[in-house]
Length: 257
Image (cartoon, rainbow, N blue to C red; front, side, top):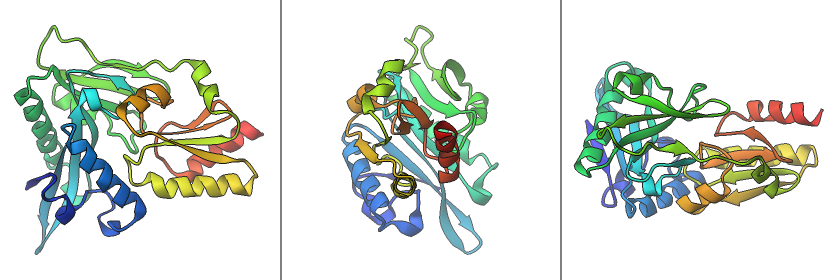
């Protein structure tokens, strides 16, 4: 079963991420963030499956018209997927395709050019390209270190979306120390931010947070194609998207040696 999450039922169902920690600060911020995005046409569909005698949420898709996308891309006229996850025993059963088809159907109904998705070869907090290739998507752009932009076109003459180019001098705008660029779009980053602050405190390096408040902020202030999260230290990116603190610390240590 696929449930459409909207203004009327979000307080009942919550969101897919961290269902067991709905009262956490990160989740509360995300739910409030989503309520604002509903006004811009965001859609969230959650996959509910039966496991034995119980039902549980095991996946979701989050997407929004490209004009309001919180990714580091130019995609006006396209539907942009932020996240697509299927987990546990619900994987490898066609559920990802079912969620993706909901997005495709909505984009066609709104007469858009097609559907776009930023993927990452390293996966993690972004989907890998495999499912999208199966559904007829094609790669139209790429950006270091591992980001790729895939689209499914409905109109052959459609202007293609593209990654926003990030000039090197932009990396210097946040000054010395560690800067976390965050938006609250991902509830997992709240805990990650605390761990980065602890890391900075241990080694006496100042940590500050630049909070992105709008899609326009993504275009003007973000340093990563991921858009809504990035960590920079003295003009060098040490994390392009949410990931484990051990990975971030390892890259940081390599810069200060």
